[in-house]
Length: 291
Ligand code: NAD
Image 1 (cartoon, rainbow, N blue to C red):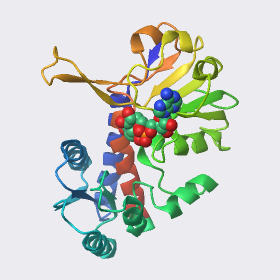
Image 2 (spheres, rainbow, N blue to C red):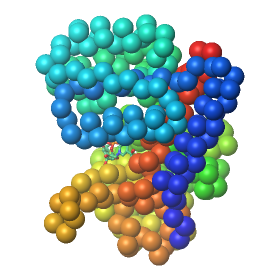
Image 3 (cartoon, protein in one colour):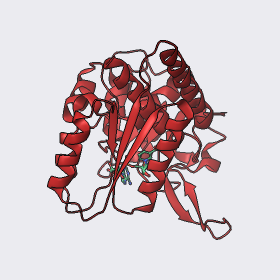
Image 4 (cartoon, rainbow, N blue to C red):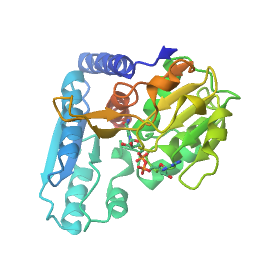
């Protein structure tokens, strides 16, 4: 079994970004500026945004946090987004999800300028991704591709099963892996909550990418010897032995699959750390495009 160390690979990506920033500074070019919009008081959202800001500091990006009370109206939020769209110093920005229920998420994401949409969720960028046109790829699928490439896992002609069809992970990664490029050319199957006989689908697969959010759902008897597993799932499971009272668990029962797999990502420390480094990579790209 080979462990894919997402923390290490993410660190390498951040170091590469830092080198690009040093180079930009030498050439008197502007440093990238990432902004984040945070609405409300959700603890997990605050943690995610803070990690993004910390990562900006590590690589030498400028960052801004726009915090709003969860009573903000949809129109007011749209007007704030328009201001950020027009702010020439900000290269990219994200709207931390989820938004309060009275705000239409789709409407808000559509207001983000596609040139600053470093999350890759605007329909223009999502469409480009689907067509295989260079654009900002959504961060988690881009992170998965980076892990696969840097671990030299062969995808061409391989049977790849994506479990989960969300707009942020399952659907985009299934599109990317089927495309005709160096990290694609897989024969991709997408499974979801209505799929039948998941065990059979898993046993037939060379690569499994699981993004469902059910702790330890995939067991050793469901996978083929030597297959590669990318575990995207992140679920908090009660654990009184942990100081926090919970532990983070993936979709895969690591213990029972570890003796059979070729490559596997741990949880935590696999896909998770890649998401932020890919967001920063997109922000650098946005900045370079506006040079
Ligand atoms: P989601 O939570 O929106 O949807 C879950 C998906 O799983 C659905 O498409 C559903 O059809 C499928 N599903 C549910 N039960 C199933 C079953 N029994 N068999 C087959 N498919 C089933 O998806 P999401 O937003 O992609 O999140 C999935 C998991 O990935 C969550 O645990 C989430 O926390 C995690 N996640 C991690 C990262 C990261 O950076 N590592 C990023 C995004 C999401």
